[in-house]
Image (cartoon, rainbow, N blue to C red):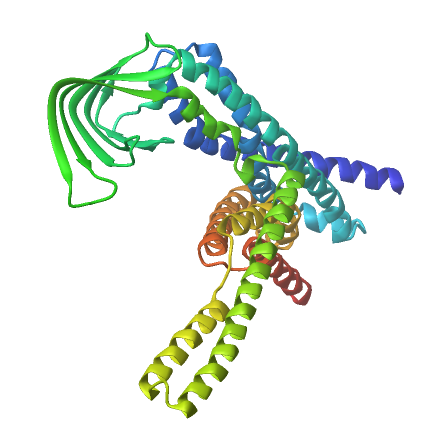
Length: 425
């Protein structure tokens, strides 16, 4: 009997892996087009060596794989179970004395493997790939500085903001620059066109034509000046641009590194809260001391009632401001959301399979196509919930745990409801 179960497990597992593989290629292709080809086209247009472009794409693959696998597991399991159901293989299994849980075991076991693999890709290979990507991109930036200037783009550098029109080769049409001069005055530069000069190492040099400059004094905004020039040279230090690559986002860090940063940010926030508590206590102490002093002066007639009232209101508002001051760290919330996402997204492989198994049993005709359609719909539904949760978690300070785990819980609840409906059928 054990050998019989082994044969059935292998048969079910092969069907599930095949369906998941086909689904994985589908999602991989979509995410690849969305994230990679646009980047490759932008860099290739700057005559960057093809091999370097291939390496950039290769270093970006872990993120695509980690994102594609959970959705592939959902669609693949629905297709596999739908195929078994539509071809009456489920009935054949049950007629042979094989319980549905035996059909579920190999799919669930492979789903756990997919979940672990997705987590490893996201937690280890994604940070490693990002590190290699940034190292290679920095090197390309020094040899091809023009890749930072794209057509119809707005980019914020360390010391300036640049907006430009069409870019063809090294020629830039219409250039708008907002920066700050050494003495602190703000400056707006508008040029009809510019040419990128690559001859100066470590610098993006823009040779601008027909330039208008508007500068506003730092100490007096009513003081400003205009200047016009036929040509002007503007330089951007590449070290200021490449500095952004040294600090990866929490998505590009391992879960351990993200957790370490969370602890540091929590300690800093706790310190700020303690300092605010001390300032509140000092403000309350000053209020009580001043209150007694002013009362004595009122009895002595050395201060008017209106003056005493104004002093009380000013001190009371100061105390109230300290008490009601809400200290928060938005970057801490970003790290918390990303930390939970690093676990909830890979775990969704298991949740999707728990959902797909009972739902797939209801498909009696066109099992594969029905499974594929339901899988696409649920993938979009889950992705929408994930994006909404991430937005609420970061912008509305919604608890990070619920923001990232609630989509999994909803899919799990739907799966359990479908399983209960199958039992009661």
